[in-house]
Structure formats: C-alpha cells, structure tokens
Image 1 (cartoon, rainbow, N blue to C red):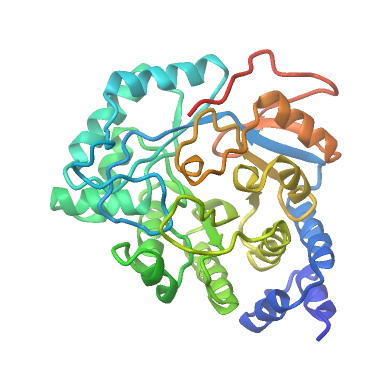
Image 2 (cartoon, one colour):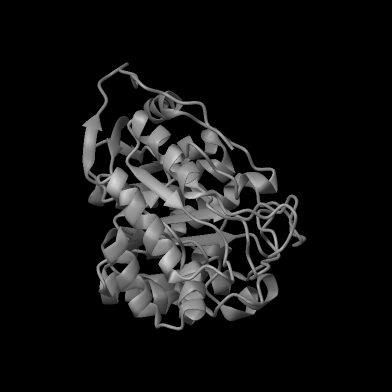
Length: 369
C-alpha cells in the first residue's frame, strides 16, 4: 500500500486517523516519512533554529515500590543501596547547575512509600527560596499519585500544593505505552493509561504544563503505538497542556525485562510518525541520551526542532548501561552540523540566546553521574 495519500493528507493539514497511523507503521518508507515530518515541523518553526535547554537531572531518591521490570535504577525500600539525598546535597547540585547557566531542574525519584506531600513541599520551598529563577520541571505522575496516596489527599490537591510550593511543570515520565496490555506486562503496579492521562490533565488544569512521552521496544504492538499517539492527541485537544513530545527506545541492559534493543531506524520512524499524527504539539525533542549524538543530529531532519536538555547529571537511563553524554559545546557543534542555528531556551520554549556562527559557550561542564 502506498503511503503517499497519507503523507499528502498530513501536509495538507488534515488529521490522520488510526488506520493512517497503522499504515505508516507498517511501511518501510522511513525517509519519505522523515521528509514529511520535517516539513510539518517547519510549519511550526519556519526559521532554521534548533533549541536546547541547560538543565540537570537530580535523582533525589532511588527508593521505589512500583518495581517496574524495565527499570535498572530503583532499589526496593530497605535495600542497602537505597538512598534519599539530604536537602543540602540537592541544593548544591542546583547551585552547580546555575553556575554554568542552567535554568531547569528535572528532579525525579521513585514511588517512595514513606514520603508525604509535606516532604516535597518543604524541599521545593527551600529550592525556590535559594534559587527563585530556576524552573522545577520535576516529579512524575507516579510520584504524584504515590504522595497523594501516602498523604491521604486527592491528586488535584497534591498538584495544587506542589505548585504553590514551587513546582513549575510536570514531565511526561511514566507514560511508556498508553495501553494496559503492555503496562501490565512491564509494570503491574503502575497505574493504567487512563490514570496517567488524567493526572496529566489535572496538572494542566491547575496551571502546570507538561511534556508527553512514548517509549517503544517493550514488545508492544503497532496498534498500541498508534493508540498511544491518539490518546496523547485527544488529551492535548482538551487541555493544550503539553509543551513538547519525546519518543525514545527502551534500553534493556541490566533490567529484568528481556527485549531486543531496537535499531535507530525504528526510533526515527516512530519519531516521524509521531510528528505527522500529533498535529497539536508544537515542539519535539531529540532523544540523544538513548540514541546517541549522531542519531540525535539526524532526528533534526525527522521532525525534531529541539535537542532537549544538556543533562549535567543522569542516573536512570545510565543504570541501563546507556551512557551517551554531551556537553553544551558538543550540542552547539551537533546542531550546526545538522545545518541549524543553535539557541538556548527555557522550559517554556522561550529563546534566551541565539548562538552566532562559531560562537561557543563561555561556561561548559563535565557531565556527572
């Protein structure tokens, strides 16, 4: 079956259907999809600018009682390797981020069965008191749901209290695949796809925008991938709260889930199809952390307008033996090699600085784990 009519439909601004998505995933015309995705991206972003954010992942704890089979990072409660960072250590990590021009903190841990919402409120207030301008793009739907359960309050009240304490936006972690067949296979204790969507929509309603994500390579069907995209699109129609979309591939090393590592072509294909189907999300981030810098660079011609975060520190994906690392000046080089103009942004996708030709960052960093 030719995918040309579907490509023409997307380029004409018509919304793609479930059947269209299935046909695209069944096709091997990846370059054709990539070209169309790039043209769709250019409608949103006509200037040849690729943005990135200087940020740091702070994994405040590895204690988790959800026991996802695909996660190599967590430790069960009481494990000798489990930890909760003290507040001063977290504040020091943020200080280091600010010193190199960082604007975003992605603070995430596991579903800790003893930490109430008060713990997170106190921590967020301390952070904002010392670093009022830092953007806390932090926590996850699973963490919010756990602290609501432990605290005996609703998810909406939890999100309102977190926002009042200093949370600025909610990342898309935990979406994986938004279909319960695969979710039960990879993480029986994690909530249903409807719970993930509802928590995100609640966050949007209380004024916390977020990102949407998809992870492929769990052995999910292409039907589930298409349903995932449609469910994201429907939620975005309702709230408009997703600032960006990110897709990446599952990294099976050191995890309890046996799966074949997907080739780069599968990532690029899923990325292009996502851009064609998600006609209501403006920004798409490259996933160089899992795919590597060169594929990250190639993704800029498959629908991505953003190179994501510098990630001064990253422990979760690294625990699965996936350790691609770049610093700010490498990001500038990769973006230029893709024929684009690099620009630093904040979490709200406001451009803070456009780098001139051959201009490098004055402050760089060595990525840590």
